[in-house]
Length: 362
Ligand SMILES: Cc1cc2nc3c(=O)[nH]c(=O)nc-3n(C[C@H](O)[C@H](O)[C@H](O)COP(=O)(O)OP(=O)(O)OC[C@H]3O[C@@H](n4cnc5c(N)ncnc54)[C@H](O)[C@@H]3O)c2cc1C
Image (cartoon, rainbow, N blue to C red):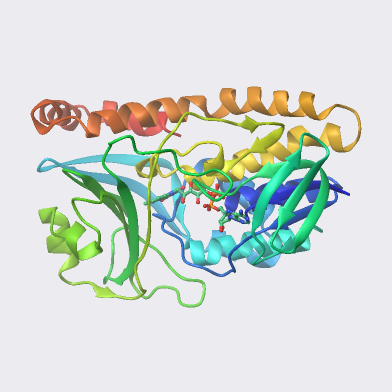
């Protein structure tokens, strides 16, 4: 009987597993894939979680954070205008290839048992639970679902006639990229570009280009670039360094931190719009929060119901405003050009408002 089984070894799952194992719980972490692996992501790690990330990583992996390129500015290219705002405190740019692998290694050294290439197929019971996997059945007192935006365990909601959105990402060579996250918007999508290093090779002039786009507008990065003149011009000098990866569908839904006694963390609980650049941070923080709320239960000082109620409340208190602001900005960006342009013109004249909006997604 494990104290905790965590489903999914992304930032949220590793964070939950490390935090619970370090508190003395008997933890088993499942991941259906294999690390290191690429992931569709802008690789912008916001400052709110850098202190937590440092604590989660092992000492030998901390240079990944210490050496990471800092992103202190955002430039938003929208409707022929460029809105600029400081990113304060600065964020870090860390390749998911390195980040997720480092967190997985930290989970191993925290004392959690880790199993890669094992898919969780279902969860039975309401505490204790039986977790059915491709490697057999396992008994546990508590379950954390960190299986991401959608999976066999939490299928994507139906699109109900709405257009389908996809994510696509690639690394390119660019000499001397500026230390800013540049967001290029166009009708039907946007693409973020920022400098990034790989652990195995730093300082080579690498940028990550990662787009969220409507499937009827573009399905490849060159198609994405062709929709935004400033991005098209910038990308002319690029040389592809890694095979592009893509993901679909991208769907947004209301936060659900708890489901039938299972604590939901990271994207499994709620997906924040990628342009906010907070998904990794929310994953790390909600994973650690779930473990923290479960500690009294592991120690038999509280019931599972009490622990999950505590998590539910804390989750809404700490993260609710991020989801609200990001969905407001998303609605503004998706307004038809005739309504959106005056708003953007106003924002260009009032940098303090842009700064306020950026700050409120933190
Ligand atoms: C286009 C795009 C750009 C983005 N850019 C940024 C950005 O710049 N900054 C940022 O902070 N966030 C960004 N995000 C969001 C970020 O990628 C996610 O929020 C983050 O990965 C969530 O972490 P997670 O651990 O919850 O889920 P994931 O990272 O998706 O991890 C879930 C894991 O669970 C595993 N899994 C799934 N089902 C099972 C199963 N049944 N059994 C076992 N394992 C399973 C998966 O293989 C996966 O490894 C972006 C997202 C997109 C789509």
